[in-house]
Length: 122
Image (cartoon, rainbow, N blue to C red; front, top):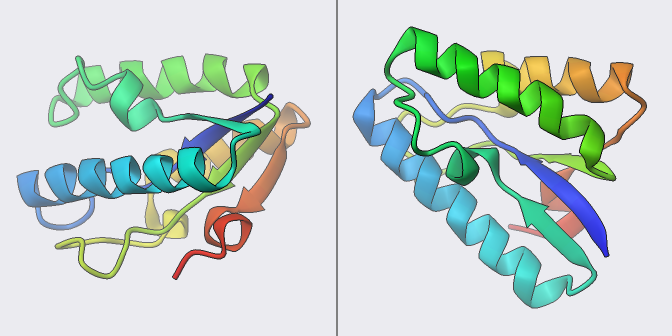
């Protein structure tokens, strides 16, 4: 089984709406992975670290630090933009967290992929 880290913007531009919408977006993505790619175990830090308050700067930094430790344990990192229906959604390249995750993956030799291409996702 291949362990795939799901990198996705979380904050966006609409405060708590972006957080909830992005949380739900990642849930849908992980469901699609489970249904269409049985050889892939999606690892969602958005869900894994949901016990931390993403609106609190210190807790958000703690989550990013934990993500940095998690990425090297994965086979690949798949990057997703927010879906069009996400209020205040952004591309992963506009997300401070995703940019950091991308940098960590490359520095640790973890393969990075366009998630939507990996899923043939519309």
